[in-house]
Length: 501
RNA sequence: GUGCCCGUAGCUCAGCUGGUAGAGCAGUGGCCUUUUAAGCCAUUGGCCGCAGGUUCGAAUCCUGCCGGGCACACCA
Image (tube, rainbow, N blue to C red; front, side, top):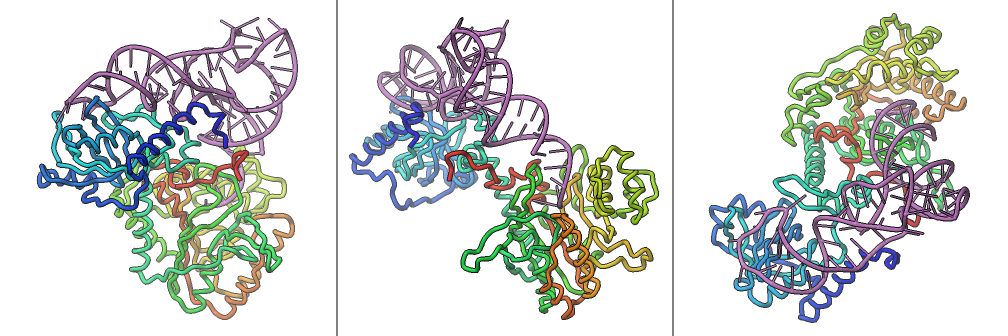
């Protein structure tokens, strides 16, 4: 190992190994099997009136330690909080006190004793019996805290992400975020289940990827000797299930996109997609508002503050047309087919468009730069250009033939969801995917591949359907007030360090 | 991918107009039987991210590389 290099750390580890050995010499297994715990830390504190003077046992990691000769105070931290323990040789007895002398910060122990309050009023356990549950031989990072303020906190983001277990031990607010994440996901599932949706699982490994614009991860199946891609969306498979007769389906799972990483993008991320037969995007706007409201309620969030804008989840979201928003932002009449004019508008606003950018790309550039950042309050942007929506149905009662029924939901300037009234006309679908395939041939890596199986499925007959894709990580960010996706992912993607395998 | 900033003890940081490293916490030894960032005394611990270069001499200046943060680009 690299031990010799890290003298100080090596020393610490060596000392602790020796302590573990001493425990063994005393006939104590420093890594025992079970512990009979009667209460969790917060149960003792909240139930103090009834527990006062009673004997309880709690278990957890030692996170603070103050020795005073023949007595000491320490806090043990468990799943829900921490409780102070007081150990005095006269009360604990020789055996427990000898064990205690061999303990360190970071060890996991079981403490049994009477509940009391100290002179300063802190509810504590007067330990009569102390058991080692795990002798820690590698020190924890981080400092001390006073009145909620942590000194010398374990703050290096890289270290926190790479060693999340340490982050979770030392920074309890991190645990809260992930507990909330779980509650949000549970609430979303419950909401969909109660609304008659069937949760399904579709392939992650796919010979043809589709359903979104993105570059995929590529992998190799040895036995089949074929190239497979990690899915970039669940869409095409979920639609097959609608065709198969499940009227409402959803999948909440990882998608993978081989693109840059930043505050809102991780290469693998959790996508929720839900599809319902016999509904359109109008239904889904209302439904999505309710879904987010249910998620917010699950973590007791009524409003959140983003860059000075207060977002109230009880209120309906604004709905605004794609073209209208662009016209408002540019002060120009937007003609969807007028590539020349769109290029000019881009130039005028200092937006670099690639030489041969097609209409869809130009529009998206304008939206991204001029409109989206301003969408702080929840907004459904509706009725997108057909050119960038190959899976959506044309907007009814629209003569141009250039607009589809689609919405994207923005909150706090971030895209949260994307939805269509799904294209169900197989002839139209075939043509549009063929057009994508052509763009792809011309070198547009994000254009969608032609999926013959999918088109044939649509040819069998697909009921009118609406579908939504919603970024779960971003929803969690929104509801937990985190500004980086890495802070809502337990193990965000990190570059491999040299020497790692 | 590009730009800016950062990488010094287990943790948090100082030292950076060049003279080969310092603090607090943690650790170790001692004192201390109601403390709470406990206290007091003593003390161990450093490939100063890596590799080159300039120099009599580099943590410090220069170049490249590795890793990270932030912003931009691409996207959800």
